[in-house]
Amino acid sequence: MTVFERIKKLTKERSKTMKQVTLDLGYSENYFYSLKSGKQPSADKLNELADYFNVSVDYLLGREEKVTSVDLSEDDVVFSFDGKEVSPEEIRAAIAVIKAARGE
Image 1 (tube, rainbow, N blue to C red):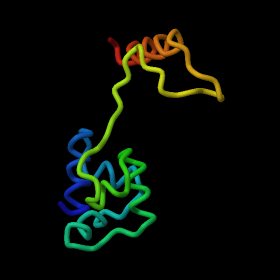
Image 2 (image 1 turned 135 degrees about the vertical axis):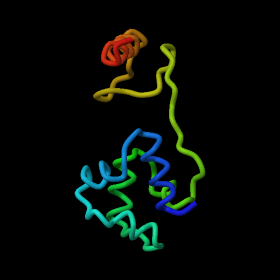
Image 3 (image 1 turned 60 degrees about the vertical axis):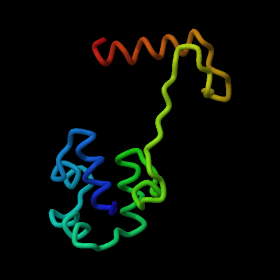
Image 4 (image 1 turned 180 degrees about the horizontal axis):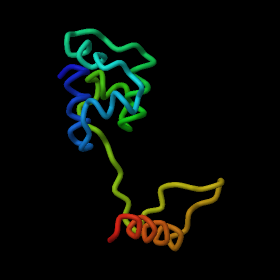
């Protein structure tokens, strides 16, 4: 899979259009079509695209085959905030805020 094909796949997975991505990133209208034609993106563009889609540059280049995600349950303590471990109660509160924001 080429860089262009991966970008196209990520765009579709996120329910966006190539035009939306172009506008969001401030690229020229023909930028993605130049990638489709085989042009390789610069390191700066790769970093911008990876940040935009929340994937690694290695994924865009085909060095990683899948995008990894973490599914946190209410019992998981996998991070800290301000140098302090996040308590189970704080995790449950954060999950409740996310659910409320989603309308669940």
